[in-house]
Length: 276
Length: 116
Image (tube, rainbow over all chains, first blue to last red; front, side, top):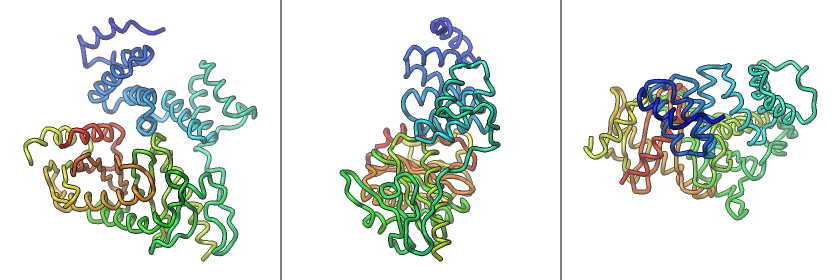
């Protein structure tokens, strides 16, 4: 039942340092008062930046606002602070399911269900994501399952480094250090093939990223994400002499995009090894 | 530091793990205002951030990503974060390793909207 917002607001006003902001923020969410819930969540988070429940509340508010990228990062923060946090496992499971990653979703939702066995709705969600498979007798893996699809490209330069991966010819592009397209493809707005025009600038952009990390003494660079108004992109170097671009619709979690790019980079490395 | 931007930058650098923040001219990579911890070279950071933004913007245009709203360079020892503003300015922050970036990203996006 939604708590009395007026009473909770009064408590919060009387003692801003109390943890009542958690209940107030949740009550505001349930009432659909998104802006007010955001203010309360941010106020609580600024006072308690290391409190997992504060990040969890903020993540739920963000998910309500369909800011899934930030919500993913916040729930990821919760799990770093508190690996057995039910709400964060539920939240990340939801985001993975929404992003079309049922095995990753199942992993997190199962953990949540085992941490909170009284939540019947959660058990139902797990069974739905499992798609009729027997799930409860199957031991839970110690880590999230690896990507289920790996490259099976033929040996040699022929074939596609991203075969089997979603978006292999529309959202993934692999180039060499001179900007020569090695595999994948990129489709721009209106269905136009922009692979070659992007290939020409991809290698120089990743070189610039590496140069920035080096000159700023930030250590080895891992990836560069570019959040565009329409589409998000993640750039990385699968090997020292290749660059990869992966794209996803804006609004999907940044962590999900980076994960997608890492999967593609792994497939590209395997393909390059076989080719060489 | 340019006085007008001081409160904005200080509100960023007050966040845990933020080693510095700057307002940079995107066109020439010059420092407009800065609030940096010792050890960070402002002119170098400004030049690199502007150069990276320029490259990423060119790529974004060619790939049809739409105008870049936020860049995040993740490295082993920290992150470089850039929020291009509607004007010629970009807001830049350097974060230490393992800093939760969600709140910082949101703050930077909001602040970038106010940059003129």
